Each structure stands twice: as C-alpha cells, then as structure tokens.
Length: 480
Image (cartoon, rainbow, N blue to C red; front, side, top):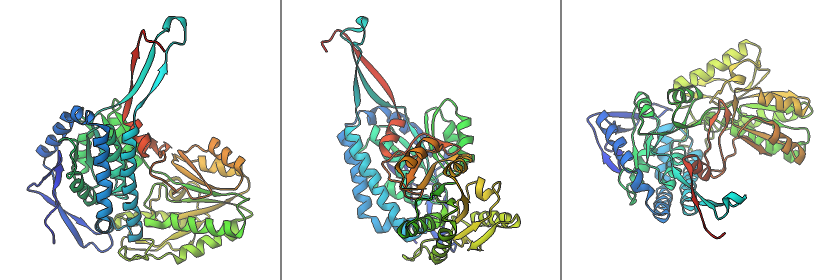
C-alpha cells in the first residue's frame, strides 16, 4: 500500500490530518487513500488563485504552451500507470481507460497549440464620415479564476478539458475532482508541479460536494465550469446567476437509422457502433446511445443484429483488456438502472437481451416496446441500456429526437446530403453526427448541448473563447 496521495495547493503538495479511501467499484477493494483539504487549505487555494490572476495572464503564450506540452508529454510517458489508475478508481475497462489517456494527451497538446495562436482581430471603424481614421483592435482577456468541477466518468480527460483551456488563456483554475475518482486529477497535479507556471495558477482540491458548493458561491471565483448531472448543475447555476457558468450536463442521446442506410455494410456498421457505444463504459457517458430509432423497413433486420452484437459484448473485470462493459460507478447506480428496467417491463416493455444486475454490474441490455413516458426514454439512464423503436418518416423520427428535455448530440445514419443538412437545421441539439453514433467526439471540436443538456462549449479553442471576454482598443487619427 502506497502512502496517501497529497492534494495540491498553489502548485505544492499538501497533507492533512484527515484521509479518505478510494474504493474499486467492481469488488470494493481499497485502491488508495488521499489527504482531504481542511477549510484553511481551501481558503489558501482560493487566495493563491486570486492573486495569480495578473502574473499568469502576463506570462507569454510560449511559456503557457510549453507547460501544456510538458503535461501532454509526461502523460504519454506515464501512459500505462495512469490508465491503470483510471481502471482502479472508476472501474472503467482497460480498453477505454487507454482511450481516455490518449484523449487527454491530445487535449493538452491542442491547448498548447491554441495558446500560441489565440490572439484577436482587427476591425475597421472608418465606415462612415464621422469615424475616419479609426480602427479597432479586439483582444480576449480571462474572465477570472475558474472553478472546475469534474465528474467521475472521465476522471482524467474531463479534468483536462477544464485545466488545459484555462491555463492556455492565462486563467488560474481550482479543480474539484469527483469524490469517487480523485486519483487521476491528483496525478495530473504531480505533472503540473513539474512546470514553471506562476504559483497559484492551479490547485487540486479533493473535497466533498458540500465544500464545492461553498466554492461556487465564493465571489473570488467568477467562472464556474461544471460537468455532471443536470439536477446538480442547474441547482448550482441558480445559486450564482451573476457568474459566468458553463454547464456540461446530461442527455439521452438518439441514433436515427434512415431508410437509405440499407446495404449489408451499412447495417453491419450501424449495428456494431450502436451496440458498442450504447454499452461501453457501462453506458456512463452523456452521449452514450440510449434511444435507437430505426426506419420500419429496416427494423427487423437491424434490431436483430443489434441484439446479437450486444449479447456478444464482453462484460466483466475491467482489468481484462478484452472487456468492453465493466461495472457502474457503484452498486447504488446499478440498482437505479435495474429499477428503471423493472418499471418499464411492468408497463409492457420487452427485454431482448441482458437486463440482469449482479452487484455493481448490469448486463448490456437492449429493450423494445418501452413506454414513451418511462424513465428509459425521458430520463438519462447512464447505464448499459438502449431502447429501440421504429418510425415511418424522417419527419417523425426528427420530431421524436426533439421530444426530449435534453439536447446534446444525435447520430443520423444516412447517405443523403440533403437529409444531413435538414437534420442539422431541424434537430435541437448541440451536435449532429452523420453516419455514426452520437457518442463520437473529437476533443478539439465544439462540444456542448442545449435545453437541459447545458450551456457553453468545450473543445479546446471553444472553451478558451468561453473563458474569456472581448475588450476593444480603438485607435484614432491613424492612416488606414
């Protein structure tokens, strides 16, 4: 057993008189312990971040880029170690933990690149007789210290999506990782400590959720970036209407398979992608496939393929490199998913494969005939369950997608470019993925939803814009 992990204040490791355990979801073995910041430690981190605003903003773009690139490089060097930690603390299968580390490496690399070219624009103001000789120089400046609250399901890469853009624009950040999965963020602290960023540029505080709510209220932290459930996120937003709040919340992502997606290769691709990304990581992603809408002419063939491929998914020990579907984050989460399945079945739904729970594991599940007002359709299951239905017209399918409190991403399987553009114009979501599942995400593309799925954007450059505001410098009496 290693010594308890320290937390990080203003770039320095700290210990305290209190530690807490990190438990593996699958079998409840002790993974590690870490020190818990006291109230005085939290206050020190806030003071340091507030005082670091000017020094960090005044660092050169090159210095910030070098620090971010160092993080990317060191994550690559510690790849296997960090992937193992992700498996241990959150129960994410090894294949997906490796994907997550790769994505975090890329996220920091892209932030380093964007830091070097994040500038501004020139605007001509000599557009009428009274404004002759005037020009505007528009630059972006940090809104202030960022409080980043991260979830358990991507304990490294979603921390990266808060830390990397903030440091790239010169904004100090305090990271509050999820209580169940803090170790990835604490290791990231070890790597950040190797850089030459000004003291106070970053802190990692593994505190409880009550303390994080106090941090949300702190006026010295004018920017809150939250990823998690819509219930918690909207509650926090309501507490601080005067702050700049970015929310990446939930979804019940749909995959729509249209009539023209009908060849053998088409059906094989759709079935493989839908079954895999409806159940990978136990469905614990806000863009996991949840609702599958299939044209009535393809329904029998494609639905049977999805069921067959789902039944073949390897469900078990997340340390096994062949496992696709591991445990949920804890048994309580699995019990909730099971209860949603049971409720739907009691109202006429059919379980076509899976549906059983053992401890924190829920079998990869496919269902049909699920009532439209059930939680499995209306809510975010956040578990390895997909529900299938059929439609007769594209308009009907698109209306079903929009009939949701959420609006994050949707996958539309079609070869028709006109239909693709129609989907883009019609679907009330943050992203339309053509020819693939809604779970597709590249970490430098704009990512974020509408309605109960949140406000604001991730994706490095887009997050950098969100964390900054425009300030114009008007030059007068110049020759243009």
